[in-house]
Image 1 (spheres, rainbow, N blue to C red):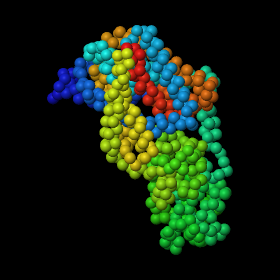
Image 2: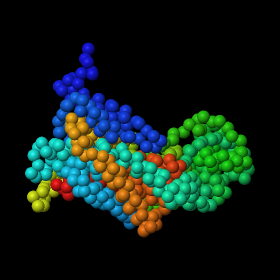
Image 3: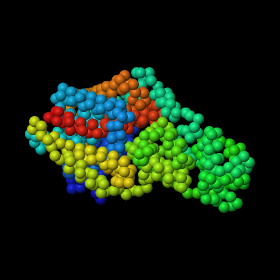
Image 4: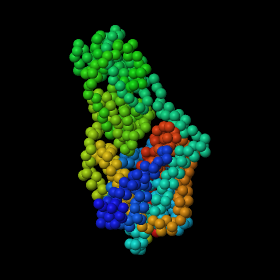
Length: 567
């Protein structure tokens, strides 16, 4: 029987150590306090440092680079549509605030690193952890490996210090960011996040007498009724639906049974007494609607109610519909009987309101009868068939081209400056993600594959980084001292304060939106979770997506910039 407690087993089989590290890392990542969790990435890094120090095993650098470049491409691919959308006029205030946060974060980390005499490794670790951007680790290590006049041993030592600095500063940085935005700033400014968010939600819902306007959450129900009211006998389905619309009801007749036979559905079908009709409506509408009074008694007709329905994912791409609000779209004839169930933006569910504008690359989830949903999907953009197959031609070519554009370097004062293969992969991921959003029939990368490349790719990378840095963790931490933790905490808070003052006093942003913008600019997922929990609403997320895309790009690049500044 193999002794799994014998660390020597991992010398000939280092791949087993990587998977053990990932398993323990994800377990550590589940440690949670309210909305704040340690996270799988930090868990994998800590597990790697501990197991690396215990085993003394070193993992091949090529394996580490493979996972990292895959992660960066996936990151760019995910945020690409949102990143380029943010460069347009309506997203510029949020982009500007994110730039302020990121630039001030770089400056404060550079100042502290210079004060404390840190080399490029600890400087980058301080920046990555304080600003909660894991991608800094790989980009900084790549930049360190190309520094002139640095021996391979020194480069390895500095590269390990990146992981150590990150591991020390990241947990506190995450906690401080979440606490500051969700609790401290609202209390200092005497703002009730829940009340402010509720007020904004009510405003964004834009109440109107138009019966097509309802809440952002839809639950479609289907009932069958026998026509008994004489005043609707002889009217067409279209007339009936228009009449109900005028009365404030969004009610649709989707099927008709007459004399035991189900009729071919058209809007011009004239209703007769004794017809059994299938009524489709939002649950809230039907609760307020007395169907017995308006139509007749309810009946159970399994065949009539069992017609083929469809839930269709559509990527918004039709130019005529882009930039229009949900309320405007729902008034269109092609949306009759079709409901927008959800909207996804940048891979995450977007808490849309009636005033929310549909942007290129948004995924709309439509529900309703198949005969109605398909034309509606075609009018809005490109239907995306459910497919679990990843277009590996798209992924492989994107990473290859990104790596190629990242190789060439300019030499400034003897220092080679380049995007590096990882930086090139990020840029090409942005481009390919944008192209996918514009032309959704190309380059299918389903959510599961995106998770594998993004989350697992990064976790595998940091696990290997932790394993390789483990043997030098104690000595590196001793060299850094407690100053790293203290100054890391300050470096987390200062950019958020700067961004808040700029957003609150100069840009005049609404408080819930500003909190989301700051969480996005510092790419702290735990913070937006805490903010939403505190506000008891998804409204702050409206300010999160664009800054998150911008912050991911800038903070990742800062990993190389601070290495050059501290060289």
